Amino acid sequence: MSEDLKAIIGNDEGSLEPVPSPDPIIVVVDWIVGSSERPFTGILQSIDLGNEIVVSLRVQVDDAFAFLSSSERNVGYVELHHGTVVTKIDGPFTPHQVRMSELDPVNQTCTLGFAVKQRSR
Image 1 (cartoon, rainbow, N blue to C red):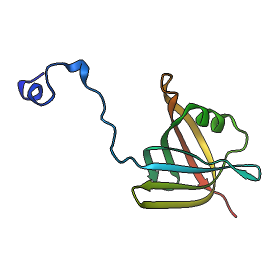
Image 2 (image 1 turned 135 degrees about the vertical axis):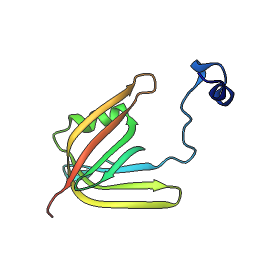
Image 3 (image 1 turned 90 degrees about the vertical axis):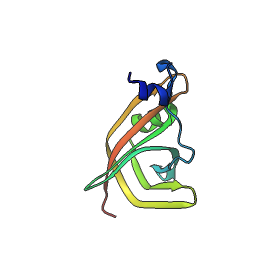
């Protein structure tokens, strides 16, 4: 490690930990199961608003596993909350390419990712 870098981060390389964002972007996913809604929330990891919407969020393992294993994966909307700003992406959507990664068994969290296509109404 260079001396300049040591001056910035210190000598103990093993003590570096990611610093959580003081104001994360919260994602609300309006998951529709049958005729009822089961919204869940997470912290935004990434979003791509191309031809398809691709979302990755940090969630509780129980929510991710329920969503992943459900035969009914319909999403009414996705909302992004940052401070007082709310951006709503209206559906309905049909998720596909659902994946669960970066499992943290100690904290019971993981990254849930999925792509959505807008369904015809």
